[in-house]
Length: 368
Image 1 (cartoon, rainbow, N blue to C red):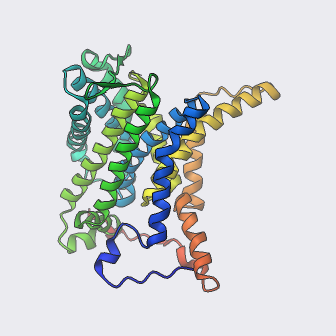
Image 2: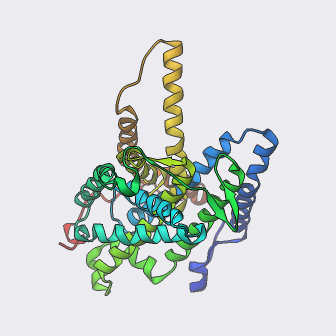
Image 3: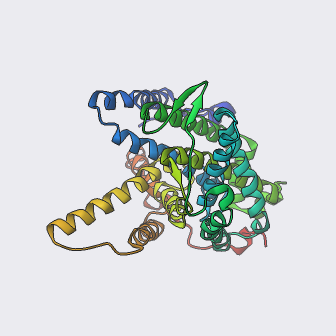
């Protein structure tokens, strides 16, 4: 059991609670930096590509986690913002803008236009806001078709390679360099996210999530806070979409579909709402589920001659997992780990109802 005594405000907001925690996170960083060395020795970079895909997805889940987990605003349309970032990055690169400028600029453009689009529905909350953003995800493919002149429409468009000071980076030509580029972006986004939670703006997000009435009573501008959260969330989604385009090499109107939006929501619910760790755990799980489904189909077809090529099966499984976690473990995988850790830390003084959910919902918690 470890007791952490906070004797100052700095101790409450510092990055690491104690030295051992800093050691383990440092060890994790060393592991991530050294991971490509194993695949260089093994000579098979396929799994490294899968790890890179999980890291890209984790950027998008961190953006959605900031919006849903920290601010309490549900969104089922983040694939739309990923598409904005992807196509903005492509057009900027085709216009001759260096990647080091086009990449962050694409994220900012996705944040700006995403916030501009959702601004009319910011007064909605709960399922109504989720349905409004879901409509955005549904029409994303149609908008890409209508703007075929810039996006390529159904035929699609090729994504230019990354060029940093004349060095060309392509996922298939040099996957190790592409992995380090993605890892650098992930580290920057995590550092920004972690620091944001310690600022007054991050505390404002939590206040709006917990009680809009109380937040407004403390002088927090609800509309401005929600718009800022959407902007930062859409920016992260735009960055993830730009990297996803480089990973795919070619994007069409079906690349950023509604399944991707549902997968993002699945990731944060399963991983654990409100935790940065939950964004990564959810990205790992959502990346493994399609592989498990594909392997399950192959095994059933070869061993038992059962064909499971059912349209919409993957979406149905995703939805079932989300419903199961909402009903039985609303805090997600990381929340379950917190419960287990707290049990052993407080044993034998652990109380069963310590993490019990509040069954009643006060309508006054939301500003109409």
